[in-house]
Length: 309
Image (cartoon, rainbow, N blue to C red):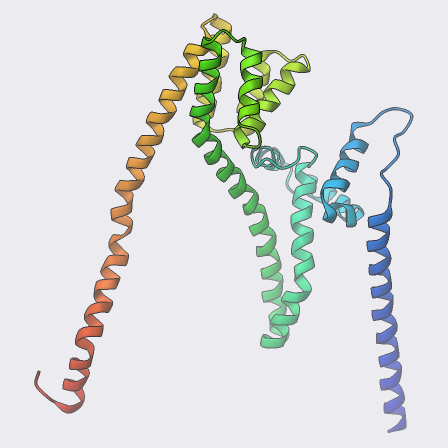
């Protein structure tokens, strides 16, 4: 009996030491991550150091778990090499900071899923026993997948917002250029008028690229690559073609704005036509439920008591 109690006490002491060590390491990790200064540049300037410092300032999770994220990023480069370009395009289209590398963003999603894993294991093992470990692993994987899908959803929603506002942006460019302003001055004024909107951010990057010395066609082509949308790509293609052929841009902007409005009206008509079809099944179910509610008591009365109604 005494030996058993001694073994229990020893086990409890060991568990206390392990838990205390884990808590102490966690506190040290958090304090070190929050108080560590930016990385120092080498004698030769390296953009990657500035990128990492910017990410550390912008994202607390990256700052706190940077060494672990770097390990995951190396694994992602090998495991998802074929899809990293698409992830990077979605990062750009979603309007996330340009400092993210695709493998690092995937590592962030995986880390968040792993941080949720203890809660999954605790809940699944509590209600399902040891067999709940499989369910917990599946929930962890699904969490990482949902975080990855959330990036795609953000990119799609931002594209919708851009396409809704783009006709008005092009109209403003047309009015300014027809009033005698140059293309650069018109673009600056339009970007300032739509400040804070995604369409202003994207065309602001066009303006920045041109101010850095890039050709106008190259700056617009970068927008097409970032957003990778058919409608926006057609507009950018028309702008590039007019630049090569010498067609006045104001005419192109007006034509593309009208075309976008027509396409938006067509989408609205399509959605309105689909709405009636989509509501058919819910309507049938509501009618069936109403019939059951009305006739159900009479049917039960007839079946139980044989009363004719």
